[in-house]
Image 1 (cartoon, one colour):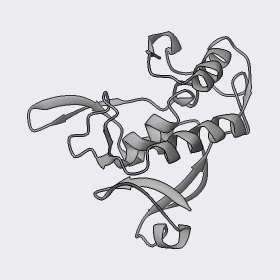
Image 2 (cartoon, one colour):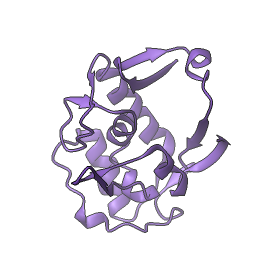
Image 3 (cartoon, helix red, strand yellow):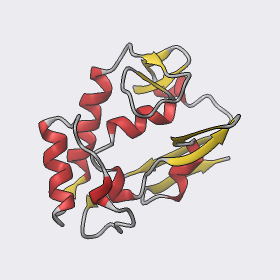
Image 4 (cartoon, helix red, strand yellow):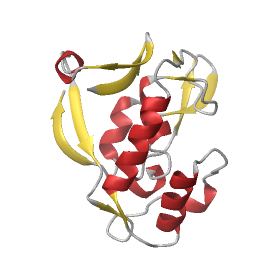
Length: 152
């Protein structure tokens, strides 16, 4: 099963239905995060006010230079994903509030405690004279995530 966000909002569907698409990328976290992963991002600039205790523990360990098994981050991401089933789709692409989620915003949100350590960051985009920080699907390809399959 896959939990993701589309126009219908955050929902769960089977992997075969999810995979019926023209383009797909399967990426994964390195087995261990921390000392073995390049930290290209200014970690101190990230705010952490909404972290759960487990997210805070993972984030602080990585920030302090320790290593964390990716399975711990994945378990936390699964908990967050399941807890947000039924949330609406964010057609405004507002990455600052967590009341609704676009597709990339959802992934960024559930993995937010490890994003700075695999170089996943919001990018300033201009759309119709407006500028905001967002994350496009292709932005995940140039990060510290391992590329398993990329079909463009």
